[in-house]
Each structure stands twice: as C-alpha cells, then as structure tokens.
Image (cartoon, rainbow, N blue to C red; front, side, top):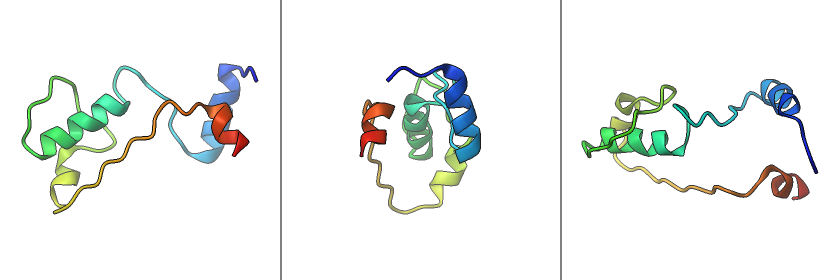
Length: 77
C-alpha cells in the first residue's frame, strides 16, 4: 500500500502522535535522554519532549523498543 506523506500528517494530527523527525525527535534521542538521566555519556541531543530531569525522579526504568514494524504491518493487525 503506497501512501502520501500528506496522508500521514493529517492522520498524525487527528490521532495526536508524532511523525519521525530524524534530526531531533527519534529513538537515538530517547536513548540519549535516558543516558543523561543516568549520568552516562551520550554524543546525541536529548529529546525535547522528554528531558532527563523528567526521568531522574523514577527509581526503575523499563525501556522496550519495537521498531521497524512498518505502518502497513501494524494496520493489518
């Protein structure tokens, strides 16, 4: 199934989820936020939507990434 980028923008606005932003809002930035929260080094910027200060208050963190599923596979389920 081929989709246009504009279709995703409209759908994301209606459902309040973020489209990938490979420069500042992606999985590597999430990992960087976790690293900074745990005082570990990271060469990448942190997520603007999840600063390390918001993570530090938690005693336990569970991090599970499911990536690369593809929109079409998710929609089939």
